[in-house]
Length: 457
Length: 126
Image (cartoon, rainbow over the protein chains, first blue to last red):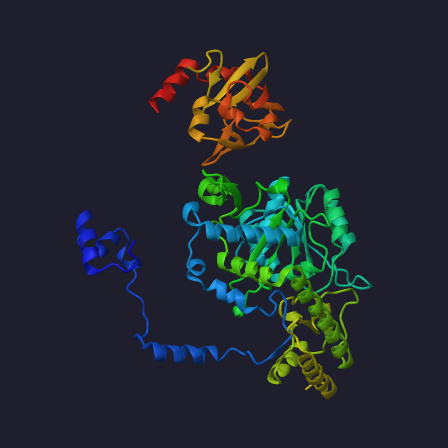
């Protein structure tokens, strides 16, 4: 098969075969006023000049900062083996594996990805992946409504605000109801999901709940009482959706262990670069009993006509191209390359390596807490965290901006993403991972200390 | 030739009436068109169904098809064997592959359905 572009002769032959004078004639149905008049692009440049221009553009990225930013996307060290394998043409440009006869490699890597995620989440079925954590969470919530035939879900305010927004967008289209579970205001459980409120909301028999969605760790970095949430949800006949961060699953209890029915999350921390927000990786997993409700591609293992092991896309009749308007979702693809990166990363790190990454992050975060506390910025909440937490900083936004000027990316001013919570106005969400150094922590604490000592400016 | 003692719908369901109870399934023609059936979704017991409404789903390796209620009434029994052996619809669609038992709300509805000859005519045209 020739992969070169069509020549003028090729085009002339094709036009002659169908009896059309020019390519433009094929678009005669489109009104003149709606037709494209061509793309307004700058003149072509030489490769050298273009490379220089792109380098200047890329140089505007700040890669010199001591970064303590998390909030859903995390800095980790990615071993070189990930890129080396990812960039292989067989993987990098492979298309969707519709024909198993010529796609065994791709199909096997997706199967491995699914298997690794099943191990990490402790659940039975994993889809081939979704766009990102937000859409995976929205799909999980939709699943819970479909499976229970109920029209309402409860979502903790501890779930990432972007995920909640995406969920509401999906729910609006489906005419379903999503209500927020408040967080505990004070006391030892401050900042975590309010279980008493959850119980009250579940008791509203006029509006039965299909799913309860809670993140662990939460957006604020806190560990949530997942087993309790699960018990309350199940007692009310609702499914339990757990939103998770995959690296944390190496050290925290898995969704399967605390009886979650569905798990959703973002796989960016697994060897996928930050890349200014994407592409990332939507992880979706569920119990066996929900296998017909899970959207997305599923790759299965079977044997071919010669009895050899083979991989195929399976349970295809669930999908949009066959079920059409009755499908669970419009998805008909996956984040293949990102899923592959995650698979190679986990393969390279292994279970011990992954545990080390999570534990080191936790240790650095503990050191960060001490340093910031000494600098005058104590934690906002008392409960346990893994590697991310909120600290009280007066005029957080202004301080954040000034620290940027001093080479420190001081996490995220929480009021920027959660403007309606008065307890979060003077707060920064900070995080540490295995790549956070003691020097960086010292620089942050020192700069912050100066800011706080200097008072309001 | 399809069983003479049954009634049929244009959507290829069959009905066996005994008093005020109707047993419902899909015909061999439908099963053959669908191919190997892998999953069947039936309505909950006690549910009231309306004639000709979609009440379930039949999924094969290549397609998904709605199951339409040929008659209206209350679903009093569903064939639980189909959850483990959906292939019964292909192998024995008029016998072991029965799908639902419905208590008729309006027995007169059956008279409006196709008889065996009319159904044969329908499927031989297609």
